[in-house]
Amino acid sequence: MINTHRPSVDVTHTTLSVLFIALLVAGTFWVLQPFLTSILWATVVCVATWPLLLRLERLLGHRRGLAVAIMTAAILLVVFVPVTLALVTIVKNAPHMADEIRSVQTLTLPGPPRVLERIPIAGARLAARWRHFAALGPDDRAAIVLPYAQTALQWFAGKAGGLGAMLLQFLLTAIVAAVLFAKGEVAREGVLRFATRLGGQEGHNVAIHAAATIRSVVLGVVGTALLQTAIGGFGLFIAGVPGAALLTAVMLFLCLAQLGPALVLAPAVAWMYWSGTSGLATTLLVISVIAATIDNFVRPFLIKRGADLPLILIFAGVIGGLIAFGIVGLFIGPVVLTVAHTLLSKWVSAEARSEMAH
Image (cartoon, rainbow, N blue to C red):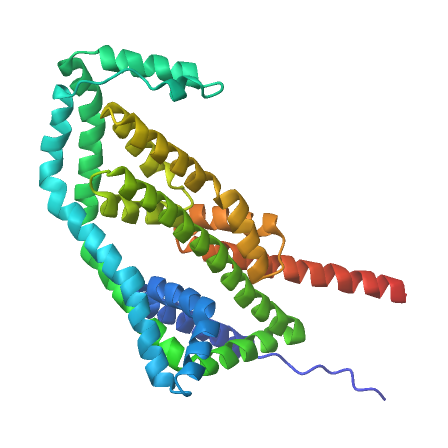
């Protein structure tokens, strides 16, 4: 006689176990919440620069501690020091910005440059607006400009209160990155074991794809941003634009945020033309066009070198992640889409093989 009796399920035990796990996860998230941004940034930095750390370690005679110290110092020099200098400069000059803005009343604006009128579609309309603004009296001109300038100053003032927290986040990122650099193999094996436990060999492969995606996005986005900033900053310096160093720092942030260098270079070109230095202004205009358009060629090339992934997937993840999560979403978005794409592709392939077998 077959025993059809099924073992009873302890519903209370199962419910309490699930509740305890949920509370444990929530408590862990609550404790780590102040550090999540730093942990995410440090993870992105370490995954992207891990091959560089290994190469540096070999050059230093396999001394991991010295290699970690050099990499951490490089992160501080590349990120912490420039950002600190840029923010200190903005805060230091904020009280004088209002006086500089009011000087717009005394400016004598020349007519629009001829090159502006030659721009297809919008050139004639932009030139007409330029002439209209130049023909206004000082009071009318100030009435148009000052409300926007005051709004910008209020925004800067509001952000100034968060500068200390921002710098603290950068410092925490460097500290967490140093820990991950020192214990990178342990962290890697832990992530791979967890992924394998969840999805077997496919989970392992997905984790490898995620790391490759982070490297490709960092190489494409950051590499392109540095190149655009270098070209734009070179143009600002040779044109003699005041505050070129500060503008270059701002341009780097805009390029990293996928807004491009034009938001800095276009006003600089217009200011150069208004100042009457047409030769230098035209030179800066040519350099600005190169800096603003070179990303269309460089970014896809660098991304394809980092990982063989569909570009539409990377770009959708970059833009969508930026909108959803802010700047850190530049790297989270592509990883999420890549993992989803890999799992879906494997599932569809498995279904197709199963149907063919039947």
